[in-house]
Length: 113
Length: 114
Image 1: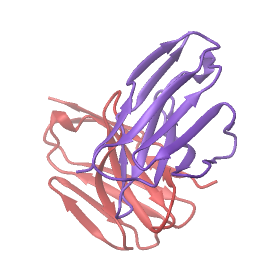
Image 2 (image 1 turned 90 degrees about the horizontal axis):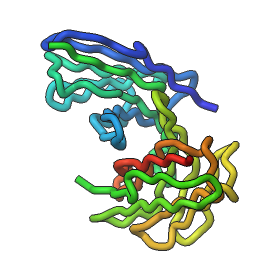
Image 3 (image 1 turned 60 degrees about the horizontal axis):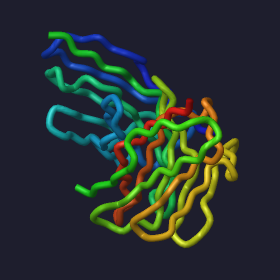
């Protein structure tokens, strides 16, 4: 089946630093989504991307939908302690009915003061 | 934003018993809900797609008789883990599809089978 590989697997950064993570696929997706999951909670949607080449921001977060439709990246600027968590990319093939999400392997972010 | 609620958030049961987990869309109707399973430090793996008024569609390798899914109304889907065993211990998460196709996730339910 489809697989999404995220890198890096984990990151240890200092507060105030910028963060960059990416997601690559062996196949094409029509939609890319980025989620954050806190321990013991469900994922929360951060950014949704619907068009190849699209660059979208949400506060300190910026994500881009790769031109090839096989990759996406997420940047977090000026990280703060509450950015700690696991970030997942997710891809979807169809934007219409009952379309399934394929989740990436996750990037664990730790922020030190 | 739309809210999806799961209950219970944590459940501990004895091996051999059945456990039901509920997933509710609180402020919107969802004809489609999804059930995921997540092991520690791993990603979410889709188990099944739950469709209101019809049978669920299970992913390859997921036993439909083991994980019973019922989507009886537009706001409620249930996952029943039958004859649970310790290897069924996991974090189970549901999501509901909103009108624009976006997915909203529940808080997750942690099942521990002793």
